[in-house]
Length: 161
Length: 292
Image (cartoon, rainbow over all chains, first blue to last red; front, side, top):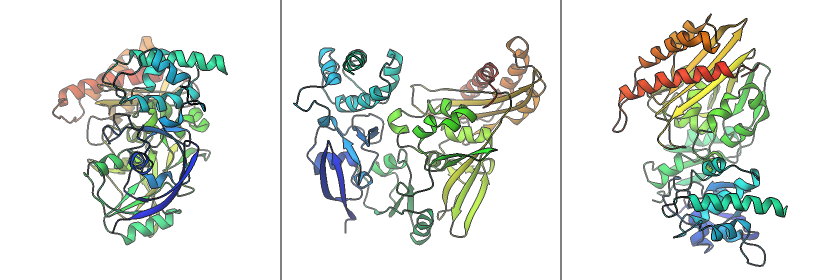
């Protein structure tokens, strides 16, 4: 008999109730339970960073958290980052402009990590950005475009606020 | 790459958690999950029961007791880095935490989880050795205190029973004119250290009056360099005069027992230990600031 629990959580502003098997990771629940396949499962042991989401505003590995542990919490995935009218937000637009992605596998984790990072560090140095994404592996870009995008987005966001 | 089925428990008190551990054979404690979850995902660990501590009130947070800092076992690494008491009384803790994983893993990882997982190269056990912190462990018969010196029994084996729970850690204040240094070397930022070294120095009247040095990653448990600590007392901490004293400490570090593995020989770990101990001491001598 599978061990299951009823959970309620908010994902990208929308409340969801579900019955989950307790061994299901938060990342697998988002993808398979809610159909939010923007979150990518890569290494599934906390190293690659692709599955990063925000839980109560803090960036965490969704492969290292059980769905049942997110009960009562607020989750933001890459699907929740765009502006309300569906246009790209400042960080996403900067990724586009600076070629901050190629295959796109790491992108959801990069965007969620950098969203939390730029909120806490609105005026980062290049070194700060490189440290912030040191836990997110990209095999395409060589990181330069991602770093440029993050620095550009920081400037845009400061002007906007 | 998915955990095998287990029965999940999320107690709301430490007593309830201990009772669950005493009732269920083959239970694993889930704290921040940054080590246990990978092992569950890869099925290196296949427990029948998982006891999650994340809903327990009262075993997280930082409190200044006057002569020590009391840290709840479920305090997240992120919160240790943001805490005002720790920044003022033990700034080596946030300095060392910068080396721990990445900010996303520090958002979940806890001090208690790290001390119970007891990876030989982890920074928090190395720091707790440096302070000889006192750990409080709760079991079915009540709480007991364990000095960190008695905590690591063997490779990744802390002195804790299957029905016991680490609830808090007490880090003594050093006070006085104290400086700190924490340095490590790893292949990539966020990897476990090949070797890490921490140092605390207290200076009164231009002379070192108290010193502590610990080395992580070299052996199965953190090493305190007590001979070097004793030898440093009485030496002058300023750069021109300390060369001999810090070099002597580095030479003692070179003589430690060190592990070897497929990537790193014991001789290389010993050389790193010598270099890093000297750097940690130099850093400590440079940031004497009245507290550490």
